[in-house]
Length: 400
Image (cartoon, rainbow, N blue to C red; front, side):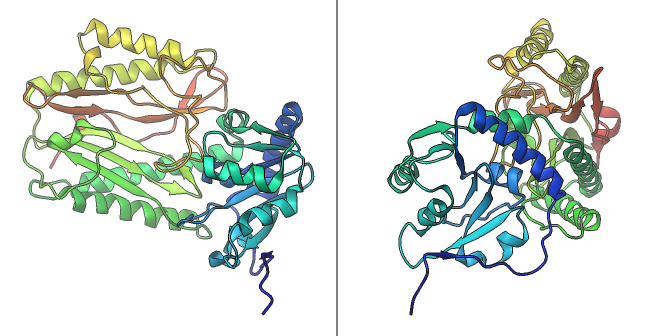
């Protein structure tokens, strides 16, 4: 039997999150960056860039995937285990590589790039082992890190992206209301989280009937479990007076949105209320600072000063916000658009960023727990548009 190194397996109708023109526009921006960097072909290996430029969101499960972009071609490289699904879900061509011989993946890539060319790669994703194989199989005349340029492109959202992100924010709100309805003394974190997740997945399926559904999740934390923003769900049962952290994360075609709120079960004590109100005030102040021309570092320093004046800055645990788009808790991050002291990016219309101050008061102190509010804002020509609708603060979020 003659077993091929790679082949094309195209069947079914193509279904993409965006129009072909949207992907052509993104590829046009990429090719301009390639020309500026002297790159003949890009070999993308990350989930976020492959999804951004082709629409295909891969499931690695131990196998490598790629998108190869040249001046005239855009080709996803996928494993045989996926059959025709990558082609149905990608813009451009698709090549399937086989498992019959080691490194057929790189042979498939080479069939598009050729050898001896200037290759762009993602320095923040390609492993040392895969970089060695790139050098061996493609024999590049030069290898250049194209990841920073792609990140800058992804930070500026198109109208189609903004429309999808607005849908995501609305779905996150729906999950928030479902969680609020499920909160009661004795309920377990896991059961409350499931109520929010199920509500969001059903709503995504209603709004996007042709999409693939995966990765939507909830972090619902209570009591001491609220001390970290990314603490996983447990089976802890809710008690009267508990501080809660509501976190809903709908995923739509690789696009992440979020809703995060501080809550309390039944009642809130005076010490906790004072911390909560201070964090809400910082949240509102921070949102007022998000406008064109401001830098991430400037916004950060102003909120730092706000907390310092109230002797609360030492309870801050991380930056005040980040970009949105093709990202997830296990792939992707537009690190150049985060509200931190070391980021000097200037906010521009079309960027999408969160405001999410968090204070963590150590266990045993009055008001112990983690307090966090999170809204998503689109930078406009004159200021910002808040696309999060679920209310924040004590008036709405002392429940159960």
